[in-house]
Length: 131
Image (cartoon, rainbow, N blue to C red; front, side, top):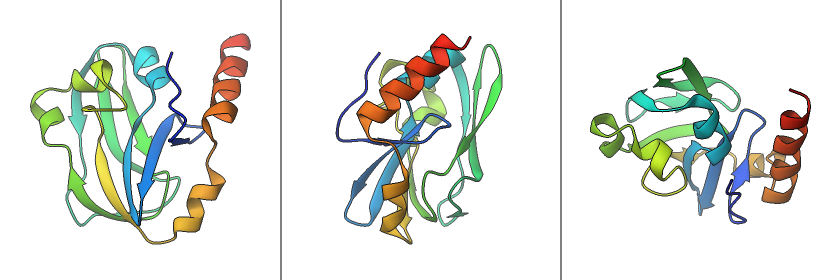
């Protein structure tokens, strides 16, 4: 399982990469592995306002449909159109071509509330141990 150091993570298994005031958002390697083969992704429309911790997107796998929660508040400025036709990219490259959206963050300080890769790795290990 991969935990890239440059990313920040939520306890719902989303990741964010902040570049200036734009955050690229996706689901973690752990999340895609737990979901299984992803068959459909319902992305928000460009211009959608996100609120930290609220659902803004849905990922459907052969096992279940799962809400994806915004790691930060802001406005969706870009969606990954490639995953509409190729949802398997979320499984194949969750931190690369499988990203979901880009958000213009309204409060960049919210990134401080997210876990770094070491904390997230420990969080995942604790979840695995409690099952």
